Length: 197
Image 1: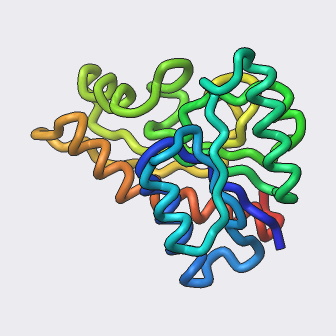
Image 2: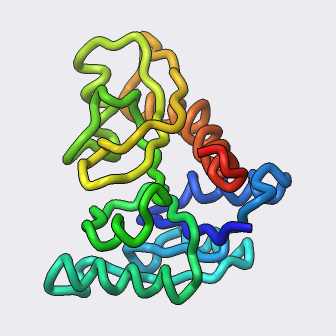
C-alpha cells in the first residue's frame, strides 16, 4: 500500500476526483494520506479535511531561497512516509532535491496534449488560450512523471478532448478537467500503485 501525497494550490477539483476514485475502491493499492498546499486558506484543504486526510501548508513565499522551500517540502513528505507525490494544480516549481528524493514517483497533470502548449508559464488558462489562438480542433490532458525539465518527464497517460466552435478558455478548461484530467489522474495513480508504471 503506497502512501500518497497530493500537492495543491487552489480549489482542489483534481484532488476531489482522486478522493472520489479512492472512495469507489479504484485505487486499491494506495491511499491519500497527506494533502500539501502551497497556500493557506485554499478550498482544497477543506476538501481534504472533509475526507479525513491530514494537511500541511508549505508556502514558497515563507522561504528566502528555493533550496530552503525544497528542503521543507521534502521534510514534510519524508515525515509522513510518502511513497508517491501527485501534483494536482500545484503552482510551485519543484527543485532537484525534491525530484531526486522521489525518482519516478512524482506525477503531474497538464491541461494539454504534451508536447503542445507546455513548459514554463503554461498553467491555468494559458494552455487553453494558446490552443484557441492556434485554432486547434483537439486538445486534452496529459499525466506525466516529473523530472528537471518543466513538463518534460515521461508521459503516462493522455486523453483527447474536442475543441468546440463556441469555446472560451474557461469553457475549454472546464471540459478538459471533466473529460480528461479527472479521469486520467486517478487512473495513473492506480497504475503506479499496482506497479504498472
